[in-house]
Amino acid sequence: MIQDIAPKTFYNEYTPETPSREDPVFVFRDREVLLAGRENGALCCPKAGDFPREDLQYLFRIDERKYYLFRGDIPENYGQADQDQDQANESGPGQDQDQVSESGPGQDQDQLNESGPGQDQDQVSESGTSQGGGPADQQAADQEPAAEDGIFSRLEAAGFEICPTRIFRRTDPKDLCFAGMTAWHLYAWYRESAFCGRCGHRTVHAESERVMRCPACGHSIYPKIAPAVIVGVTDGDRIMMTRYAGRSYKGHALIAGFCEIGENMEETVRREVIEEVGLKVKNISYYKSQPWGFAFNLLMGIYCEVDGDTTVTMDDKELAVAKWVHAGDIGQEERNLSLTAEMIMHFKESRLAGRGTEDEADGSNPVQNPGPAKAADMAADMPQDMPVNMAAGRTADITAGMPRTLTTDPVIERIRKVWGDRIPGVDVRKRETSAVILPLVHKKDGWHILFEKRASSLVTQPGEICFPGGRVEEGETLRQAAVRETMEELLVREDQIEIIADLDPAMGPSGASIWPFAAILHDYEGTWSADEVDQVFTVALNWFLDHEPEKNWTELVTVPGEDFPYELIPGGKNYPWRRKKNLMVFYHTKGGILWGVTGRMTYEFIQLLKEGQEKTEP
Figure 1 (cartoon, helix red, strand yellow):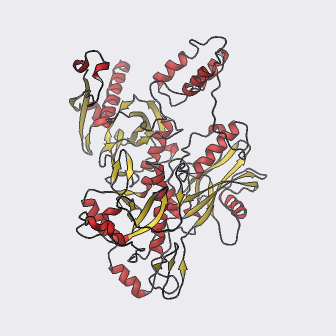
Figure 2 (figure 1 turned 180 degrees about the vertical axis):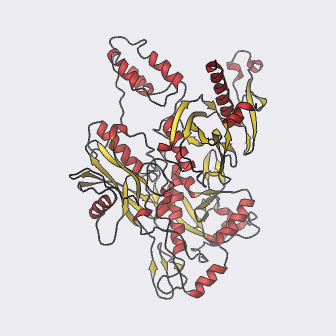
Figure 3 (figure 1 turned 90 degrees about the horizontal axis):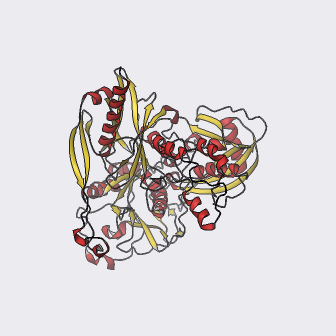
């Protein structure tokens, strides 16, 4: 889960220290964060040396690295800080908080969205409460510009990037993602606590602990934590899976809800289950917990068993789907982020292994080596999203070289275990592997191909035209990744996506493999996630069939490094390195120029479609 950052250690004690120039600083504006780009491919924050120390609030540390929050405004001469700033006095907690309100965890149960794959958990409890002060303070706050607006405009002009906070759910390093989530929790709390809820006076930060105090009436405000439950209701080898109603997130979820006043955790579980799906439960057992700072939550994972009637009576105001799902029918969920995904996968793995959910898996996944008699069963169980040509070759070859008695040497067994489930030619578990959908949408004039224009706020390739898709997460198949990413980016349901063909993989500019699937997008209503997409547009399939793209060629040249060991290869520095030509196509559409990997995938799809037409025409 996101908080699992071992071997590193998180220290949340409030022990403010003088920041060094290299300490990372989080700068937020609502659900946006300012980033300084990437170092060696990893997420990078602005540094403390770029800010006036009196505007930095100590947050926490991970190992020896201290993290700070920007709570002030930035001078016009940003970036020209005096080199003598290291000798400045230690700053106290920032006092100039002009923000009076911030969205926090609402008390409405339907605001809880701690979910499975895709992980749109920062949707949890976004309808917050306004933390107002007295009329005079409120008027002053309304007239003063937000400090973050000034710094965002200046730093953006200086080359920094503005990203949605959801970037912390899908990037590296993991400890910085956890730090970003927790920092946002504190940022939102500081904003909500800027004024006293009792008398309306501006609050100040205590010197020795993490608490905001009112100097007028003495009222103390501690960080807000909203406890909630994530419930896995089981019935033998089935688990109750849900999908939220009226949410942008369309992935799998479990039953979830906030703990209400006066009830314990067990009572919350019973109430939420009967409210959402009309079931009674028994044998309630605790699994794990998770802090979820994006929504002020402390989530408690609970398993329980259905008690009696298993008929589902769904609350359609909260849920769009509620159904029993067998363990064997559960796909792969990304389990390195959310409690929900981990609980779903723990249930699946424990049931398939013949264990109960109370038994912890030992993490092993031995590969069984069936004899030749089981070859037909192995072929039938071939992964459904394996490209057709690859699956056919591997299925036909399943018994080749298989003797009647298998060698059981330990080294050979290790090789079998490592390579047993691997697809030759590509390892879909590698981080650089991606999967996309080439979406087909039916309109009045026939079939169209849908394209996205990536959000200008994204760190990589902002504004580029592409297909919906993204990186294959750990434990996820190519097809599952393509569908999940499309659901997230276009805000559609899984049952709206009908994959009809496995297309040929392509190689991206960085050497990453990209696996495309052609799919029909049913009942698409023109929706998209503004966090990832600026706009969508379609181009008629017939237009592509009637128009040839502009073509050009690039060359890939091998350039050895300065310390390349020429003495180890024939010919030394005169080795005849080969050059590889790469076709580049450019489609001039009304929505923009299609080129690069997206243009090439479109071109190859159209070429095969033309060839198929020629073969089938009389």
